[in-house]
Figure 1 (cartoon, helix red, strand yellow):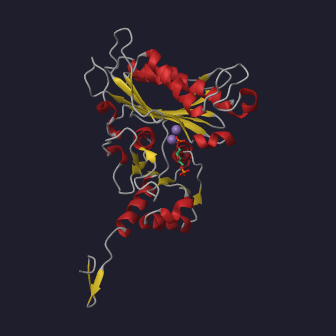
Figure 2: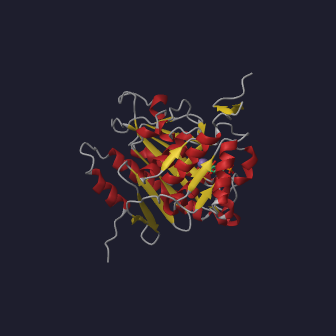
Figure 3: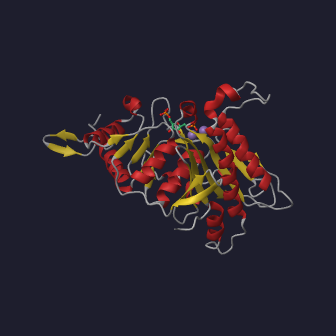
Length: 348
Ligand code: AHG
Ligand code: MN
Ligand code: MN
């Protein structure tokens, strides 16, 4: 029988891969693992509202019940603040970033970004939700407070990223830029145990994942690509929780798309908290992630903490197909004059 490897053991073992590692990153990943266990406990109780109370009411023991996404946000912030392993936090749930003063004169060199609960509209109906996180090395001077520039980094600068899914089982997947590994929570011992070693995304898959209800709101090249997926008899799967949709795509292969719509002309999903960490994981597993304008997600230079983007992410060959469609259908329509095509629009 194989010996069980816990997340903590694995992280400590991997620290040796980084010759100058001080243990700070190791500590941060462990803090996130602890917060994930606390959030998991609460997510699992979500159906017990009649006993525990609904959000913004008092529960049986007199505590005010919070919405789960705010609860998850508080727990993550608490765990990260207490350890002092990072100097700042930016969360989808907070307008501004949070500065963390140095603990015991330790000047922390990392900042953490996260979406505490992704797909939160699914909680009430028992569908998988998750936490997404990213870790960057700070740019600002290590002796002062963290600054906005520490968070507005390209995804390619991520030192580590990952997610936790609270689903039929609870799984934590992360990467420090040397492959991707997954850990399943064993509730009987309360530990995340290595269950998916060196995850690789299939070159192609049988699924495409998009909110097809918005089809008419998408640009023509996206509509053509979606038609092509349908023509190929690919199966449509859309949970409405990006972390879960990308998780399936990572394991089974396929493509996930959230294009621009009329309501969200620059895409809906947030670069810092959703697009970058999940694109980092998918790329580390051999996949690709682009915007609908064909920019590599991890090369976007964000200018705002809550900036959004369109995204197409998944199996490498399928993202390449999508790229070909966009290039083909966004080309100017050839103007035919006297039987000879010119490669431009009709002259005015
Ligand atoms: P969150 O719950 O963090 O606000 O994120 C929800 C996001 C994402 O998880 C999902 O893919 C997308 O919103 C679903 O949007 P639509 O309902 O517009 O399809
Ligand atoms: Mn989200
Ligand atoms: Mn969220």
